Image (tube, rainbow, N blue to C red; front, side):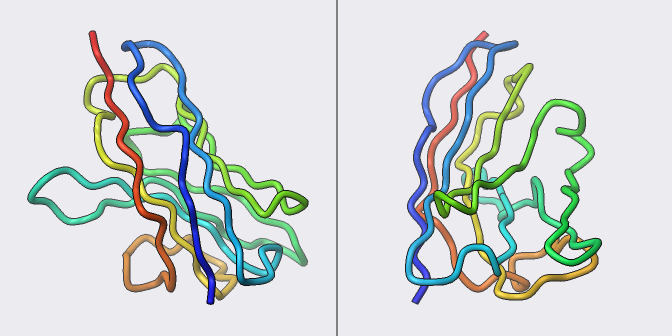
Length: 129
């Protein structure tokens, strides 16, 4: 059973940077696809970023339009950890962020919650002006 533990959330000023981490255990991390979602109170979880597999063990990241050019989705297979680097942050980026794991390698980034099998506990990100 895969377990995901998130860390790195906190308070950051507008224009600043923050990096979230998602440590995985209980599975073969290198075989898994990692995605990121955000959720505001009373709303559904919303797609932030995902991995699209374009070759043998080669992936490219896709992003929601609102974060393109500012956020970077990456992974370190040796550490079984995924990262979401957030730069030039805006007040609209304040939310609870969740990492998610998909046991499949898809040729299009999965953008809906039902495409994922496991979820992190969520970490709060707050952007101040």
